[in-house]
Image (cartoon, rainbow, N blue to C red; front, top):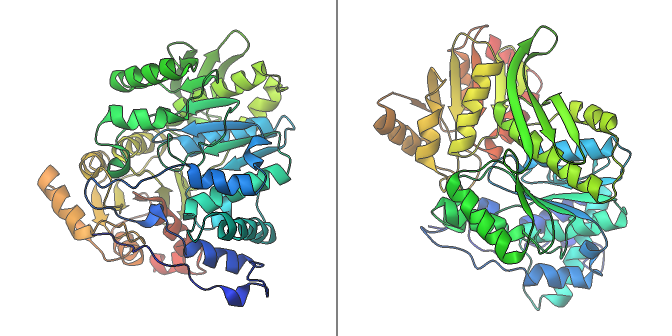
Length: 473
């Protein structure tokens, strides 16, 4: 069953002016919440929504085509898009460039998705751009409404154009070919991060089908960079790139790229990368985010930086290295509490759970680990559950705050069937944290993972005054 029905827009007149125009941040939020949001909808088995770019293009045309007035770096992939985009963003910003960043989903505030020069869009500016989108939607969509992501994406394009950014870095929301970020006729560079099984109900039930959707961002003559991929994915990407005429290079194959994990007194456990092209040479750079998977993401970001350099962007290597060192990404192996030690990570498919378990083992010392897990029902459940047991001594399943949530009882039953290990179930995250707190000591680790929604809820929970102190009693 569909967990969220397609609803008519909510009335927001109380927060609009006399002409029905949005004028406050709360009104903008209410408008967005009234729209169909595929991030929060569970589709029937094997049902695929009829996505297309026409509606996004009509909205952009009504706003003067802001997406055609800015340069864009476009990133798709299954995991690592946000990390790659953020690393590239920091390297460019450290070079004095005026850079926009559009990512999804958000953890706590929808404005996190739209950032320029290190600052997320203000509440007033957010209300203004979403108000413009709502206004033109009423005129050009003939009684229809944009989706939640269409409205946000069009608003982001308008904001970046208003700010006259030198470059906007865009992360796709879902897939690539029909993702509404995929309206820029000629990006400066495109990139694909690691591709694995995820969103199968919308993108397809094989790696090649998913890769074909992701490769939909390739454009004729536009340089494309890819992370190392499985042979099946690599064949698909090469086929699509050849068909559209996109010069595609793979890190590790066409681009000289390597990484190694090491420990030192000064930096502790960390990964270093080296990358070499005809125009760039970076040797033994410390990756700012923990985990070998982040080394791969860093390699893609550096490769994109090299492409931009070749197109005339002035890049000073030392400034780029300093920018890279400044990267901090909330929700990715983030320690949100020291007593008890609580780590959150938004890993949300089998490959990312595997990478998380390995990264924790390499980078964090602990006696035992209690893991709280919740996820959406349309995920690769077996793939995720299979990897959960790699490092967790105790597992508590709970429900994420989303209509797409998989019931914790089902997760526990599948986990027992798959591994033969027992697990506990709690109806919500707060109850799960209290249960976990009884089982952890000072040297133990509590890890919360499985979903951006769960991580966002955890950050809100631990931000409450006195919550962590309650757990220590």
